[in-house]
Image (cartoon, rainbow, N blue to C red; front, side, top):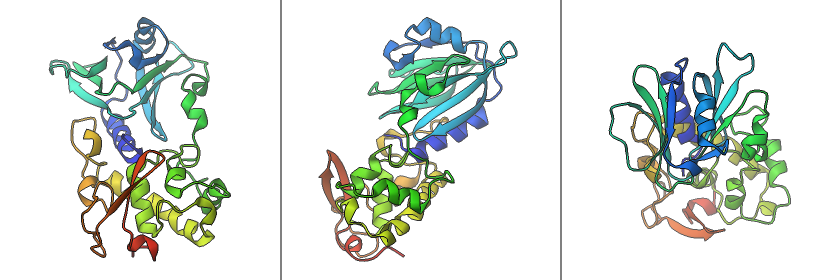
Length: 287
């Protein structure tokens, strides 16, 4: 599933390529991809004639602010890539991928295509004067973004306090940290020297203070690498991310730890795989 770095990479690409171009139309090839409005005809009619002012990211959600000279209040286009969703910026003559779900036509024979193999991804059009969170309801449940000023050591400590569940499971909870997923939670815990099955209630304040900046560091490193190639992630121009080749522990079961050469282990917590080094993460943080 694309996580914060992949979604942020997509956001930056969209802001470079799609702004201030009028949406001339579109085509919904899989109706359930459009979560709102319930009529796909209303969805296309809503975005048609609008131009994209900017793309924003909230956790793993993308939100395009749409504007038109006819309306003083903007509408919004929301996107959640879920497990396998991709937003690709292509020429209109490009052959359709068999998993193309939605096409949005823009000027100069370009289009934005939503491609989604597993079909869990969703799109929303939020009409003017309607609160976005009442339509894209997942936004209301999001915790603080790791790059927000409010994401402090105190904030993280408060979110983890008295929780009797593994720290890895807590970090995947979007009501604890917005945007963090399986890959980068594993990486952050490795660099923090914390075993993934450590209960939150047993974490010391010093461990949380160490984990906090490392979460941000890991995300920044992956964004700089254009995300990871896991789950077939592509940016808007169809290019793979580069982070996967330098992952510390994620998806490296049985391979030697890059620091101590102990084989990387994998366990399941709440149905999700967790990768870790039993040597490095039972002693002190890396570096």
